[in-house]
Length: 141
Image (cartoon, rainbow, N blue to C red; front, side, top):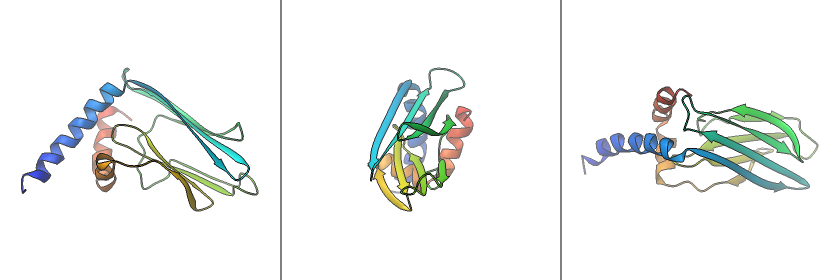
């Protein structure tokens, strides 16, 4: 049992680095209904090139509200935070996580309206933000 934690500490970053190479190109889209609004988050990335390329955009009612470049977000901090969008949506925050696939959480008006399910690897990364920083440094993000 005492060997499990050091083993996982070495294994998880290797799995993540391997997953970056195997993920290659992805185009992801989330569509969420909130009251009378449609919130769409588009994300794309390409890890086959060096440095990796990508980005995303937030659309509310088919109007582009925010864009961003390729990032590796910290799950405890929103990578998008916007205030004063409409009378029904006075704030929106997007959080990201994920070891092998992008996982998204959407907070509207201080209430989470959408969350992807996290697996054990995702939860491990959330509890160990230093690993995320090491991945950012090694990948050039």
